[in-house]
Image (cartoon, rainbow, N blue to C red; front, side, top):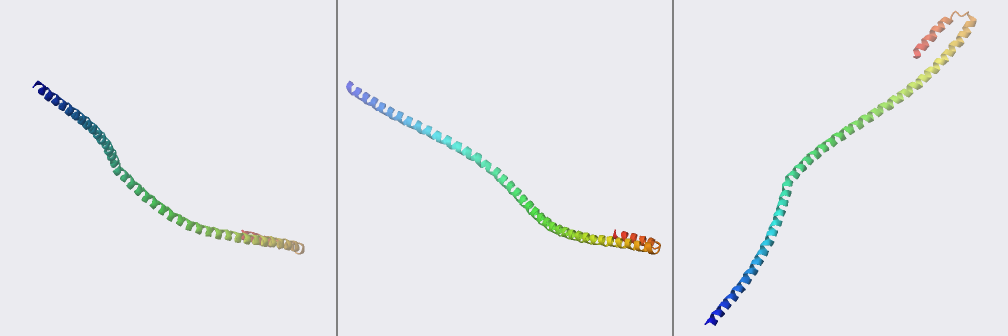
Length: 159
């Protein structure tokens, strides 16, 4: 019977050895799966934290967008006001250019008139001089004083 006990013992030992190998293999497999799972969880945690950080940036970005929209609206209002002011200035410039043209034409007309008056004055002076010469020789120069007064009146009128 000793041999029967040895067979049972050997069979039991072999069975335990096979179970030990199976359990050891299962343990290594479970540890590998756990390690893989741990890495995946850690990676997902990193993604979640990154996503959370990005999500926290969203309200800040929305605030910046609103601020940019307000600035854009303000700038559009300023552009509209400046465009309107520019149009007003253009109209005023056109009016001023018309006035300048009119003033230039008036100046040219006055200069032409002045030239004509100056020519008339010179002719009148020459006539007075001729009359003085004629009168100075005929009447002894008594009327020359009257002609000087007329000449002064003409000179004053020209200014």
